[in-house]
Amino acid sequence: MTAPRSTGPSVSVVICVYTEDRWSDILAAVDSVRAQSRPALETLLVVDHNPALLDRLTREHKETAEVRVLENRGPRGLSAGRNTGIAASYGEIIAFLDDDAVAERDWLRRFADGYADPRVLAVGGRTEPIWASGRRPVWFPEEFDWVVGCAYKGLPRGRAEVRNVLGGNASFRRTAFDAVGGFATGIGRDGDKRPLGCEETELCIRLSRARPDAVLLLDDRAVIHHRVPAARERFAYFRTRTYAEGLSKALVARSVGADKGLETERAYTGRVLPAGVARGVRDVVLGRAGGARRAGAILAGVAAAAGGYVLGSLRARCGSAAPFTIVETGRDDRSGGSERGDALEEAA
Image (cartoon, rainbow, N blue to C red; front, side, top):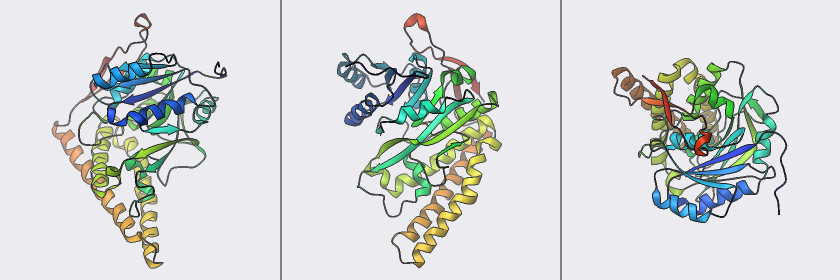
């Protein structure tokens, strides 16, 4: 049966993958895209330097016309994988989905609706956790759900303008990448043991500076469900991830300045987190489970992130922080859409 034709901008979906351990999750992610009420133009699976996974996925989808399997043409890491997908895609809109997440049926339709306004250059959605244990750990504060790649308490509800979208559930106009290049390599996850991030934050701030009229939206009706493995339900991961976030924010501030790099974070730490601590204390008074532990986790998370930021800033001042590169993602139609990977500039 032929998929219904879609009106409005065409949408390519990029899913970056790196390990066979997520095989069933990858297939589920692809299936959720194929089941969209608004069909995608194509789905691109970008494999991050894993020949065995590349071969297995190529064989799995060799007869699936709307799914293309590519190898990451850049350095190891999520940013370069996304840049490979951008450059190889054909859609007017490029949407990103995590390889361990599934999208609700209207996910792409909600994204596409946001681009009715020509000023909109990015639309992000809401990511809900699927806890491996079956429920949220009693100590885990909702204000820190970003630790596991999900929407957190404090984000605006409905459709609202934001400084940046969250990369695992986001979309951009192709013209956004034409304006500022792709994701900066050297900021986000790159196969290192430390779970860095913030590459989408840095990109969105660059975009807003290059295009002051640009509108970036969060639409919490564009929902995906993200798997949280048991290892990430533990406090040890929570502490490591919040520390890594501080390191990442230092890199972002180095690239775009602390004024914009920490603008949202100041409001978050000044308003959202104190309210979370207060709720934890209230729960202790009311005899509810986990109140003290949630309040303590918020304080520990703030301390770890602050420590990471201070260390990252010191490294940048001393010149020991690794440089990162902003990559051009223009299509090369002569090669059928292969990633060019031309380095435009290195941020010092």
